[in-house]
Amino acid sequence: MRFDAITLFPEMFDAVLDSGITRRALDRGIYRFQAWNPRDFTDDPHRTVDDRPYGGGPGMLMQAEPLDRVLNAVQRDVAADNLVSWVVHFSPRGRPLDHQRVMELKDAAISENRALVLLCGRYEGIDERLLQRRVDEEISLGDFVLSGGELPALALMDALIRQLPGALNDADSAVEDSFANGLLDCPHYTRPEVWQGMAVPDVLTSGNHAAIAQWRLQQSLTITAAQRPDLLARRGLSRQEQNYLDSLSKDANRE
Ligand code: 9WO
Image (cartoon, rainbow, N blue to C red; front, side):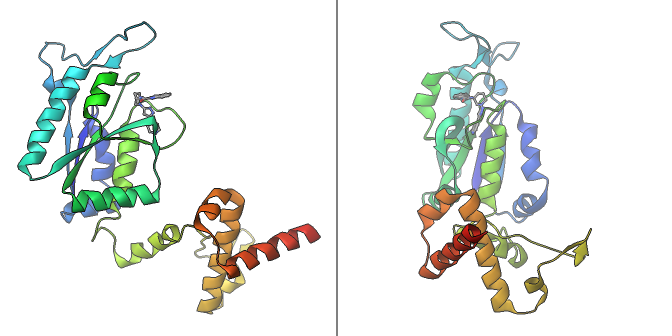
């Protein structure tokens, strides 16, 4: 898969390229990455990419023209690879990202020969006309404001790259199952068996694999019901799972 980032801070992308699973996947040739700096597509000596907002107000905006030029260059380079650009802009006004959308973006990139072009805003934002003309999709990571679109772009890359075939080893892959089942993760423990007076739950040292699997599912159900009832509502519950949660609330009422 191919990623291209349009950014005034290309070095921020070293965070994904230089460490961990995402670095190993790059070494394995599972994806490619190129950063493009809009400053390289200006023609004034100051390499200006920003200007003041019409109508007044604080701060500066990214001008349309340097971004249009860099997008044209990216598109040409992407076409030479027999791919088409899918331009994503990161903004709190976008569609909230979740696991399902990550999988859809990955599948569409593969089946429709897409390069993901990550348009990263800075300052107070980007001239609306450029967004209207060139952006295919706006994505939000949540209702908060950052200093730029780079961190959301990095988060999307990380989430997507780990889903690409061959990116995870068998040891890592099991971890994926926890979100694939639509529940939050269960608690985890490692050595020592007692730490600062706190013991590991007995079932995990029992060697009873069926009991361990049941305990983990019940923990996931309990945590998801408490922290994210919206996830449970969307996923639905089996009869057995519903009975378990009902038994918990009866216990709680007896206290
Ligand atoms: C900022 C903003 C604040 C309130 C309502 C809408 C808004 N849009 C933007 C915006 O697009 N900002 C640009 C990108 C320029 C300034 C830095 N940017 C940004 C992206 N800040 N925060 C994000 C972001 C992106 C995805 N998910 C959460 C936050």
